[in-house]
Structure formats: structure tokens, C-alpha cells
Length: 501
Ligand SMILES: C[S@@+](CC[C@H](N)C(=O)[O-])C[C@H]1O[C@@H](n2cnc3c(N)ncnc32)[C@H](O)[C@@H]1O
Image (tube, rainbow, N blue to C red; front, side, top):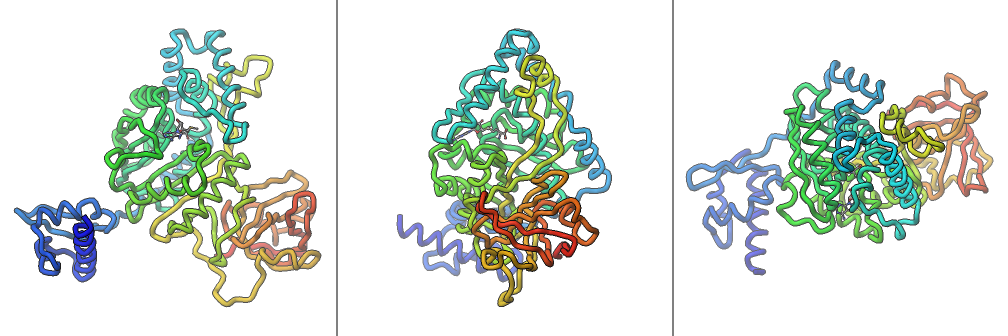
């Protein structure tokens, strides 16, 4: 066994070496370099699972194989019409009518009565309230079961529309950043009723030529049933997207044949926080296991609810996988190239709310309507890569002496210049604007505070700068906020704010 492993290791190193010297070669040529020459068929069996990771492909030529470099897929570039369709979709803010209808039909099919029957609506309300109560329990006390029909029906009525739309926002980000390819293999882990595959199929309906094959894993039978119904009723209209039936499995114990060998995009949407009781390291093991199957230019997207515990949990996980070799593409930037202290990093994105669905409106026709209408989109995400790629390239040059947020406590009461990323939308109000700042070094939260009466053309870039962008803030006053054990930097009329390129 040991000898075989050593032989395979030598074989793979040799393949890597020979591939670095020429664009293509025959597998039979490799035998000459090995201590123990092997038949081509044996060599092929040993290297086949590793080829995609090595960016190589094998083409059968008689008894031999031609090994050549895979030409990296070109990023899918959005054209103007596609951009316009995407913008119009977000402006409209509604779930596609066909999908809404399919959800209504599924509820009706499952309960054997019309979805808007008063008895059914009141059962759905109870299911939604129970799910929300469960969600706000400490993680180790949550049940998070999706074993009964109404758990899933409540999810479809209340959570699905917002998660569907937030997935589309994230897809738009990936597309605009060139992280989608013309043809992709996508894996959705913990797919539930198919939120991500359905969102991808819908998003791709606004693209001209991009194609995708979607795989999904889910352990709940009830969710898999909803997945099958919804994808059969809606997604088949988009022939450029193939949705495979969900694999019913536990994502923490996936067998090698259950997911694709080479994944271009892996998505964990609102699932990792459900691994109640799993340590950060166990969660990182799961992500790294998927990273092993990721194409060299592939992407992992993890998204979690914006709620404080799940959001900071995501940042802690992100740092753990960064330390194990993945790069954080976005939203974090490590401009001083040091690792951050993520324990209190509560950072999330806010998007335009969706319009309530007919099901939400029917549920809201009661004494406490606000309990059943879920339209706000707030989420925390991280995009991970294996190839070291990061969204923002700016790094403070090595050896530069300058201000770091890790030293902010030494400057309370002084005016300083700061370079940091804007890591929140406006957390304040019309009188006082408030933005989270991060340069990857701070130990305590830092906020930029801009009173409305201090807004000038010199400092208003902080209002419009996108989430995650790097800013230079010149001449801000440092204050310590004892109530929150955090630091505020006051942006006033003397302050200049500009984007760092
Ligand atoms: C909150 S739902 C999210 C569904 C979907 N990804 C979305 O964003 O709406 C979490 C899903 O993860 C599934 N899940 C949680 N832990 C799992 C595990 N260990 N194995 C497989 N599925 C799991 C649950 O059954 C549930 O369907």
C-alpha cells in the first residue's frame, strides 16, 4: 500500500514536471521517468482523479492518452443588454410569477386544500412563528428540523422569496466580477427546496449564452420533494441550465461519487449556521473538503443571515479557511497582509427589499401582519478562491510606516488619516450616517460617523462608495465609544474621503 502511494506520488509529480515543459505529451512517455515503469492503463487510473486539479485533460489515442493543458475558460462577460435585464429585474423586485404560482400549487398539493383556505393560512402562520422562534434560540438549542410538511411550507412562504432574491444579487456580483464562466458545474450544498438552483436558472434566463449544470445536496426528504416539484414546474423553461435531482445526503459525510469531481462554483446558502454543535474547525473541514473538488479557477460562495451571531460566525470561519490556504476574494481586504480579529466582525450587505408575494399578503391579513411579511434583504457573505485572487488588489506597501486601526487606541482625541474598507451600508439615520470600517488589523470595531450637517463634496464619497471598497479618510477625529467598546472616527467638514485605487 505504502509503496503504491509512493509510486502514485512520483507519477503525479512527474506529470506536473513534464507538463511544465511542454503543452502536450503522451502518457506512455512518462514511464521512462519512473523508478518503477507502469502500464499506461494503470497510470491513467491513478492520475485520472487529479487531472482537473492539475489543469490537465487526457484524450484517448489508441492504447495511449494525450495529456494536454486545459485552456482556462474565459470569464463570462456581461453585455449591455444583459446588464439592463438584470438591473430591471432588481428594480422590479418581484419573484417570477411562474415561481410564485408553483409555490402556491405545491402548498395546495401537499395540504389537499387551496393554499389560501383560512385553515391552511393559519397553519402556515403557526409554522412560520415556530420557525422564527427556533431561529432566535441559541444555536445549540435550535431544532432546525425540516422533517414535517409544514416546516417546508412555512419556509417556502416566508424565507424562500428573500433568499431567492439575495442569491440573484450574489450571482450578479459574481457575473460583474468575471467569476462566472461560459459553461459551469455548480454545486449547492444544503439546497433546501432548491432556492439557489431556482435562482440560478432564473438569473441565467437573463443571460444570452451562459450554460450551467447544477448539482445539489440536501438531507431532508421534505425539502427534496419540494425541490423536485418546483424545479420541474419552473426551471425546465431554461434549457441552458440543467438541474440534476438533489442527492439526499448529510453534507458532513459526503461520499466521493455524490458530488462532481470538478466544481466551478460551490454555494453554501444559509446552511453552515445550521451545523449546530460543530466547531469552527469542523465547519472549516467541510469547506476545505469542497475546496478539494473545486476547479483551480473555481469559487466558493458562503452566505449567512445578517443576524449578529451567524454573521460573526461566518467571519470566524472565513479566517479559519484562509489560514488553511483559501483566499478571501471578497468582501474582506487585508490591506496590511496581516490576519484580522473576526470575533466582533458583524458586517452585512443590505439590498432593496422585495415586494411581498401574494402568499405573504394573504398571511398578513390578520391581527399581526408584520409577523408574516418578510421582504428585507440583509446578508453576510464571503467569496473564497484557491488561486489567491482577491477583489481589491491594493496593499499598503511593505515597510510603510503609517496608521493602522490596531493602534487606534493610541490616537483618541487626535486627528488622523486612515486607509480602510467600508464594511457596511449606512447603519445610522438621516441625521447621523454611520459606517463600519476595517483595515484587517483592528481588534475592536471602528465606525466612521458623519453628521448630516458635515456632509461636503470632499467627504460624501463615503456615502456612495460600494460595500467592501477601500477608502482613504484624511483628517478624521478619533473617539472611544465606551458604551459599545468601539472606536468612532468623526468625519466632518475638514475631512476628505476618496476611493483608493
Ligand atoms: C436554512 S435552509 C437553507 C436552504 C437554502 N440553501 C436557502 O438558502 O434557502 C438549510 C438547509 O440545509 C440543510 N442542512 C442542514 N444541515 C445539513 C446537513 N448536515 N446535511 C444536509 N443538509 C443539511 C437543511 O435540511 C436545510 O434544507
